Length: 294
Image 1 (cartoon, one colour):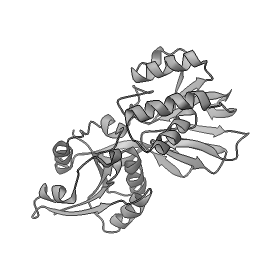
Image 2 (tube, rainbow, N blue to C red; image 1 turned 135 degrees about the vertical axis):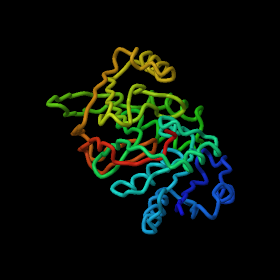
Image 3 (spheres, rainbow, N blue to C red; image 1 turned 180 degrees about the vertical axis):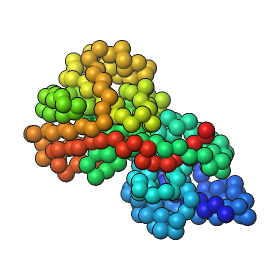
């Protein structure tokens, strides 16, 4: 008997998905599977539900949502033997795309039934985990505006990006890694574990979830025209053609923003106000077992 616990975010992807407990139960024969289903009702509720589920010792816990929901569930699974499954019903679905998990419910459920797992790397920033990416530049402001818009759509994201490009003011940032020190005022300081941000866009198309490395992109202050060029390259997944973007492969990074008390960030596409001006970021190789289609 395989015990699977599903956690569904009913408002992922603007709440337009129709993933239901009755559908899930219909997919798993009762003589082979024990199935439980919970629904989140607010931000961070998935953390609470996952911890309660862990106490029941299931074989798999399935995150049904977008990158934010996946982060809440997966963060609680670090250090356990429980495998993460994903049914992507969010807006961007960057991590699911990187893992080749389809949005089609039947196909995503089929992957869960096969039970094939692989170990993927996990990023850590202070006491938080990230599975796709995190950033402390203009992307953090974009996510803040995107969340306030109330619409999880690509046009809403582009609108937030355009507004942020006019408003964002780069701040002095000191970055230490590999015995190097950068003193910069970045438009963007983006650190990625995966090869996609969501909506099929990427700043790190060659990033791997299994290389034991983080991809760091540093982009300096830009003119308005250069920002448009950057946006064009991001949409076309051709960031390597943008000459002002610096790319580093790192295992650990220390960041300080001397003029700040708190640091605005985005972690897996969710806005976080970090109550410090110093960040320690590192990779945890193979720290999460996730169900994939091998």
